[in-house]
Image 1 (cartoon, rainbow, N blue to C red):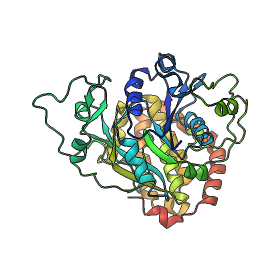
Image 2: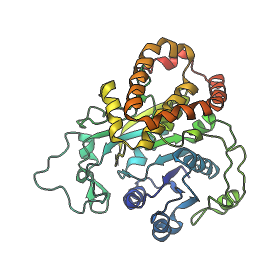
Image 3: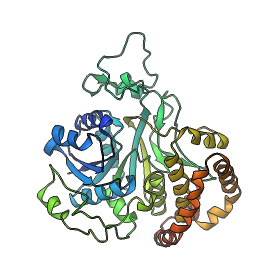
Length: 401
């Protein structure tokens, strides 16, 4: 089995039909599908069991374990099942039919690359349903030739153009000298300006292909105990070996690919940074296209003041985790010399963010309590990461724009 497609769900029923239909519509068929459900209270699990039965494997967690920990569960199982690559995808993603084929074609040619990503476009239609009619009269076709080329059926009855997907969601991750991280091209109209493949700082965790060999090399070897007797259950579609493997109570030295302490948000950037430190590249493949119902919107070309302003439109828990995890990420991964060189930029950016939080988002001040509680553990992780790092300070610094 070449690829394990891993999807973490949490009350994701409204998106799953379209997402899974696009997954099983892939032109490349050498893959398995693993769902890690984080205690959904809607119809997610019932839908999966009824509609997909033994076509996929399901792990059921009793409660919400978070994006990071749930995907770590899935990555470990994918490794045990012999997958060469793991594709993690949000349930609110819709793949074009040749997405996986294009991505794997590039991945097999680049053994020094640890993560790959395609071109993500935003879905403008809020109906969360696949349109049942073709391109309407008078609607303009996208100026991007790649988008027109991929205007085939994504799912039954719908084409790429039906999604009005000409706004870029992500063409990879980019990091600035003040350590602000953005999605490349986010918010721009897609006119072909990102049609060339290139190495990037990292790949958005909404949809990323990881090489298992790279994941094993960069994982943090801290014990992750999963109470499989009472929480995760392997359901229909699992192999006998996987069933036996997951009946044990304690997985022991499970390791962390994503950082469990992050729970959600910025864990993809943290992993991308670690991959860079360990000498693994990340590569953007524009021919591999997909669509995303982006929840927390962002733009690449926005001022620092504008970035702070975007916080107003996001849920409190998103702002809290994003703020805290950004601090944890810097503490874990940044070389001290690089940090000191850019300290004025980092300090000014963080000061303005803190000022906004102090006056308009006081609940997020609790971030600092959490940060100091986790500081000892993060210090241990930092020591482990930087001791094993293969790329020195200058090699990392070149990525700070």
